[in-house]
Length: 120
Length: 147
Picture 1 (cartoon, rainbow over the protein chains, first blue to last red):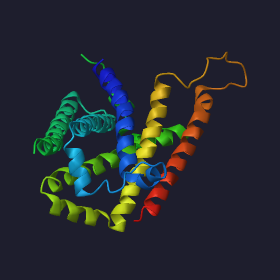
Picture 2 (cartoon, chains in turn green, brown; picture 1 turned 45 degrees about the vertical axis):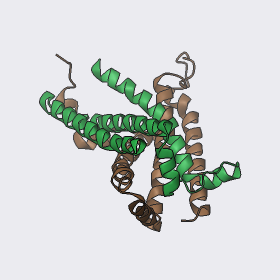
Picture 3 (cartoon, each protein chain N blue to C red; picture 1 turned 90 degrees about the horizontal axis):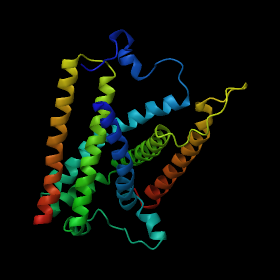
């Protein structure tokens, strides 16, 4: 049951990432094409543009949510690949806990900066 | 006690790339995993840029951006875009199939049989065409936007 729930979350986070990361990719990498449609997305990588977005709560929230979804999806996927080697129950527990701790540390590290920039 | 797969059924590391009579979809699944691991690796580097270099102020940020506009980084960035497009679209196909949306109506087993793999094959082909088209769109923007 536990693995079924984890897999269902894998599907849900996958769909959410496709939407959020799709927006991120279009904004960051399709600026020329967006320009054809009258959307000014030029200089998204400039300091001014980045700081402007970092000061808006909606962007900070979206990026933190995206980070959480991506970390879950990627690390659960990695866990599934490793568990195909059919390790013992003890090894499986060690793998799961190591991946969880890694994910939590990276999330705290990644979420700290948007919050710090928002507060500054 | 949780029921576990018998150890003698495990294919070990070999099972990651070869588990018997592979068809197109199984290779797509393999690429799905490879692109997923590649994107995870990129995510960690990307986070480094978005945290350590961003928090240190404008000068460090702009120096990082100059470094990232190196053609080799741009090629890498384009490959990440293609990997994302592939992983996202193949993932959506897998979600739709897992939830039973594109499998078609059940049919009686009358010869010549049409198994579920053949029934869903057209969706796979459409997905591959969309992936190629989107990859070309990204390629155009990378070239037109200047490397």
